[in-house]
Image (cartoon, rainbow over all chains, first blue to last red):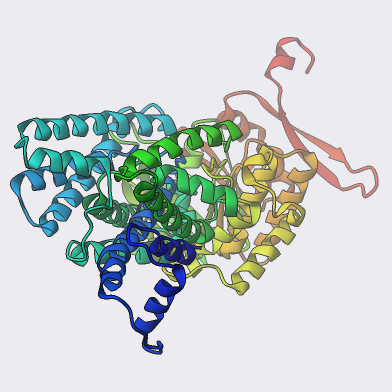
Length: 323
Length: 269
């Protein structure tokens, strides 16, 4: 499924070329490929512009969805996501600060990671303050508190930023977009997203054990504190790196795991691969919409929210029994 | 296989201890019923024995080896624990729930293999719930959930089983099925502790009984020695009477007990 979405996306774009030409161009680059003559403009459009962009959208979609599914499993709460736990807002703060200071891409990513992790940590601690039975709602409320605080700090960054240069950069970036992706930016971001995705995929069945609850998971021989920390750190690396390259793209981490759960059930052995594949496909298709709906680019963060929010409302109506 | 607790104490935070300087021992083929009032510390004791809660003082040993020196995984390969009830946030199927019992036997990166699935299905079969293995755990009744948790601990294949009120939500038939099963499991060589609020279970099925009262073990021994009117009355804080009846067919004596305070007040004893 993601393969088809990627191919479709390569066919779309301002530079007109028919699908067959693009396919044969792709084949010509493979070791067993058959040669052919292609215009250098086409090669540039495909390999310098479209391919990095589609590839990033795919990875970002996978990262956000897999972390969403893992966060939901770790906190035993189908209502959480990177956004609700405050990771996105946290990572935004770090990234905005790094942009403000004019650091390199790696600096932006590192800053996004640390503030993202800080935000999850804070959300979890705040939810523990209300000791009255940790209902799914307490965690969501704590996330809103922490997220609100961090987003205020991001606004503060915006208001002190240079209004002609830094501020537009921060604002554009906060709306979420793949428009400015270049292969250079991806040097650190690709491994920073791929490694957690692969690691989470490898340990996916164990998340079922953790989802049994703290005491049961311990009785089943799991070092719960350690495993939970590993999962949170991996998911936060994936999310923060995604936020660092593409800005804040909401709703994907919440909605995609739900759709995956409806399709394949709650067993993480199947849920994680389903989330990865659905998330990647969804993001690539959304990015296609973002660049082809209007003559000017629409921020993908706007699109995912416009589609994600009503869709989640529909899922709520269907009832996925959490209480 | 010997499970023992030596001078064990446990307290939640800075609260007064739930139990203090507690000593107990359990061997293979022993099926011990742990009786006592609500809040006397039965569940906490089980959790400490299972290594879920660390003792504040003293030690738990398996075959002489200190529990605190073992990894969680090592412990889970020897001790299985069944909680009173379980909430799941996700609608896992019964089969998925039981498969989780294989966790301690599996490598960190692996998922259950065909062999694990076979073990889980055997456990489902043994508890008699194969017919709803594809049902969602969240859609089951309290009693059915308990059966699933028992199947899960069987899939874990531990030699020591600690069961927290496994019969509390069960109807008469399922109580008998489960108690019979637990008795068989003990006879096959396992060591089992079960908490219950029904002392009659101890008369009929178990071969060891411990009475717990205010964080102490009052008495521990064979049902016939322990289940005396005086002991039961002390443990429960009400007058408990023992009755004997004859099985109409076999003529075998059956003992059972019941609280009698209300009846005596009305002069009906």
